[in-house]
Image (cartoon, rainbow, N blue to C red; front, side, top):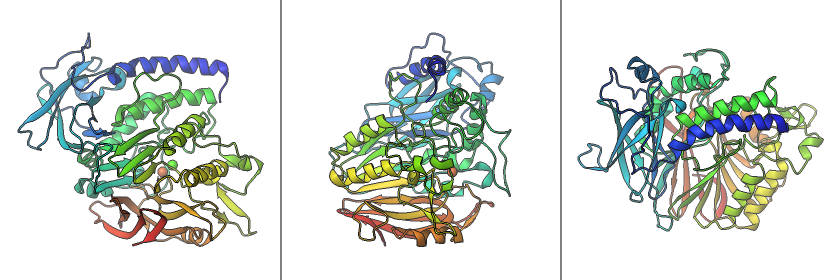
Length: 523
Ligand code: FE
Ligand code: CA
């Protein structure tokens, strides 16, 4: 990590951020927050709920409700630098005939007038509708759903997972379709924004060059969140989010930037990026946390059907070995102490897995876990150093731990690589007969990479070089999964194009995992 001096400076800056996060985090859903200087707004000239609504991190009795007030509207009404009160309402019906809960929360300029209401005391496994009010304006209605009680025998649960949505590369049509499915849960595996332009044939534009300041990141999220399809998907179901690299910087590792920033400069940038991410995401962060990191790894439970471990493989990882990209293995790469999770997160994960008792144990994480090695013309193995292939020692510890603890039905969810894959997780990827200890479902991008196509030579070569990998496709889309006590079923849903609006969606392939039988099978 970084030097003592820069870490101290970093801590000081972080303490400033922490002091503004704390009041909003300390809020309960029931008690209106008494903010000395906050204003009640009687009228506004325009509706400030332009970024929509969102809910997230459901438990069996609580859910986070999110919105963010448009700065332009507040500024035009002389509230741009003011803390203002926003009201929310919950109902079990979408017409709000009976309001079962209402409250107020303060939106502060320090957090860009974003709000995260942790509304508690709700019924388990219950659909709620919610909306926000300020100054006579009302937001769109969102649909949220609490988790079943931890011990409840849930018979079916439907979720979607998605990742990677480069705004310039195309429309978020997949989200339009996702929103129509009214999932129990939507999982986002990272690359929610991109910090810079890349690719050709851009169909819409980010403003400005590579983003670094808090205002830069906020502007970028504003652009992405103005998309009607992503707003519809957020309004349709609670989300569980994690981040990958592009929420800060391409392929960053802990305090190491992609380009020529020092660790000290990069940690300052990371504070900006992490704060903006928090401001725009419907996430519950632990109250009372402190220190220079933003620990977002966490666990969510959905009855006895599913336990979900949300992981962060960016913030704590060792730098990519041997020069990043696809490389021949070098000495550094073989060092068994290399980590992608960091020691604290790994201990937390292992502690939880040792007592795991839900039917399905789902890892919501970023980078492909199954080996995806290529081969060069000389016959050398090429290891993708940014993926779990770059951290083979720690991957082996995880796979062996799943085996030795007999973790029930591990399912790894992955994004990052803008293509669909399905793979068996084996104790030894080089041995055909090696024991399968888990299943991995890798979802394609929402838009990154443009229209995409069914197959590419690149993908087909990797498929033939990695026999534990069973499926490949490079269209855009998302994965819809249905869980029952007997079966995990994953429908790979793809759209044929995204550089024009209105693409239909269809199921390209379905893979399943049977409870008690690790590994993937074509349905
Ligand atoms: Fe990506
Ligand atoms: Ca990525």
